Length: 415
Image 1 (cartoon, rainbow, N blue to C red):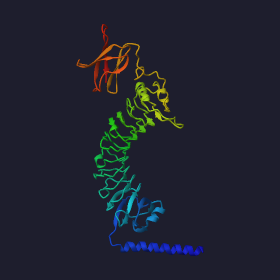
Image 2 (cartoon, rainbow, N blue to C red):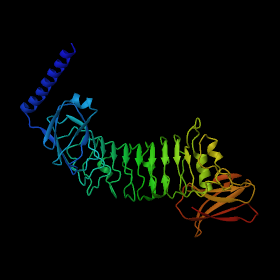
Image 3 (cartoon, helix red, strand yellow):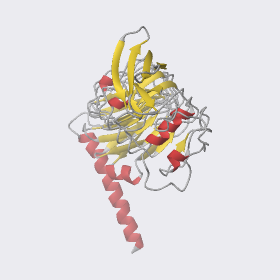
Image 4 (tube, helix red, strand yellow):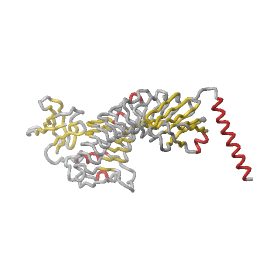
């Protein structure tokens, strides 16, 4: 019985193979092709492919036919060697191949001819310097990391949602070519600035290890859940209004403060190796959302190697179930918002673009001037802390605080 089953299986396999070969020979249309050129002519190469129709792959001088079932049984991984440095994938229907990965194959050229239906293409760790993708308007996923492009594609991809260009030596990229991105990764490049304003649907940005300096406005991407911007020279980031933001990793920058009062979903914050003093850290700790419970493994708030980490009041965060990597004793900031002295002389300070006044008793009046004496505002200030101004431009200001019959106090505030 076993011999009959083996014989039947063998006959069926030969019949199927004959049908495949016959279908290629008798197909009314000329086949379409994807051409791959590689410098690797000795080692076995593996490509990963998804197909819903029969395909033929010419590994140099050797041709092999594959059914969709055979490809699926192999987990999509097909291997072969080529002594000619050329691999050609043949197919008849434009929608036959839906996904193709050719990672680490020393490819120098990829020729897409009539493969308009492909939705995922991955070719990291190759030697591509240029690629034409005009034939692939339906791409949703594209990974070209660790190639050295002399020129990036100029095709408009309305369907592209995930783009990965890590380690490509890029200094810029026109995001108008792919305005519907949800995930964008440009780690380890040479970007000096980054404007994300066109990416309204962006959920994840990875821009670590670039040369980004100054400020980045992440608030223009209201759906952001993950921000990774490690190892740059950023002095300011705007994350206001990002209510879905879960992970913020910006260690290794030059940040002086991070305002997180609107980020109610934050769960992981890494601010290691920045320049935040104790007051800035205290304000951050107060702004962080309260967690339902503490994590049991690891830390979720990293602030080591900031100037104020050891003297900030870490208990402010710990009370809200954050697990911090550097406990602070709370001695570093006497004037953090919410803990300003109200039992001494009037005091004024800058916070979040506004001038604030603290008075020990009611009945005070405060007047705001520019440094050259231009009057901006006057108002009475109750006992405690009150905002004296709307949002102001950066600069130097004078605040005069006093009560009737007493010598006023003049305070210089730098915004």
